[in-house]
Image (tube, rainbow, N blue to C red):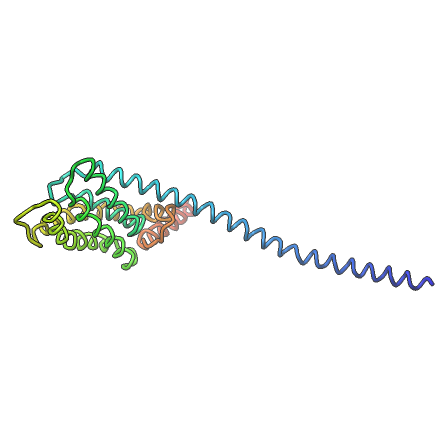
Amino acid sequence: GTKVPTVMTGFGRLLGTVEWIREMESIPRLKDRLHRSIKEWSFFMESKQQKVLRLVFLSMMIGLGVVISPILRVEGMCPMAHLINITCSVMLGPWYSLLCATLIGIIRMTVMGIPPLALTGAVFGAALSGIFYRVSGGKIIAACLGEVIGTGIIGAMVSYPVMEILMGRTGLSWMFYVPSFIAGTLIGGSIAFGLLTILSRNGTLLEFQRKLGVNIYDRGSHQQAARNLYGHHVQGAGK
């Protein structure tokens, strides 16, 4: 009669031990789930913050583009617009740059009374500048080349029918705006190239791209930042 309770008690202890082992095995799984949840939440918050930063930066570029656009401007040539286009293409990518150029053009047309050249002389270069920058793997000169081709050639040729049909201009031709558009892109592109090259060499461009959450193509600044980092360590060790 005493054997049955003893067996039942031993069986109960065995079950308790098995349950305890299962609970202990589940702890790492719970830790992994918690870790994944924290990672997902952190990524969500970081992504949300980066979207806000991109919109803030885009707004700043639009405002700056409108304010500085009269500098060195004559009809058919607006160098500062090309500076904004290339900078925005490198920092945010082609589609943000296209949006920036479109909004700047609309504001200039409605507020400053600029003809449709404000759009035809900006949107094509903005898109091609960002596309060329990405295709080249982060070469600033490619972004400038995209601006020259997009604005200096494509935009200039599109401007002819737009100005003739919408504005009633006469005596124009397909090549009428090409010289002035190319001159404007070369001036603005040279300024943008110099500025972005400086930012690339000191690692600031890489930091901007990281914080804005865009695809990082600036290999030059990444390598320079790494050299600066290791250089500081070496100098510190020597001291």
